[in-house]
Image (cartoon, rainbow, N blue to C red; front, top):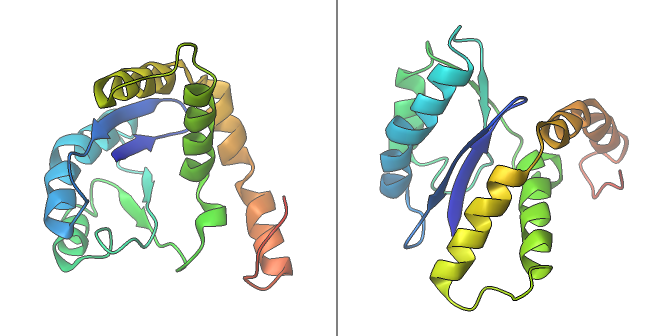
Amino acid sequence: MVWDVCSWCDMGPLIRLETTLTGDRYLSILPDHLHSFMSIVHSDGLGQFQQDNATPHASRVATKWLQEHSSDFRLFHWPPKSPEMNIIEDIRDALLHAVENRSPPPRTPMDLWTVLKDEWCELPPRYLQTLVESMPHRVAALLCVRVGPTRY
């Protein structure tokens, strides 16, 4: 399992998670990785952080930490059960596709980790920008189906 972050213009760190993500483990990621990334990419404090409503993300400890750092960046409140809206899903699909097309394929967990990091760094900035630009269309599609499955 991995944790990742990106913005309009840059890929953040790709963090390897050795075990299942819990609220406490998520809290160990936020200060070192998210905060650092946001302070560099959005030094003006105007950046917005988007996460889904996975249990660790909505945990009491993570929510408290994010509230305490709300002057550094804003948390974009995300509707529940809305994976179709999250561009990180598209990025993860692109990574999976790139891994599946590797020849030879990764054979060990360490090989897989190396390939994931390489492919993560190879995602072009224009790809990120296209995904961000797709958000108004995604929101419109979601509103049209009244929170049902969308096709965009």
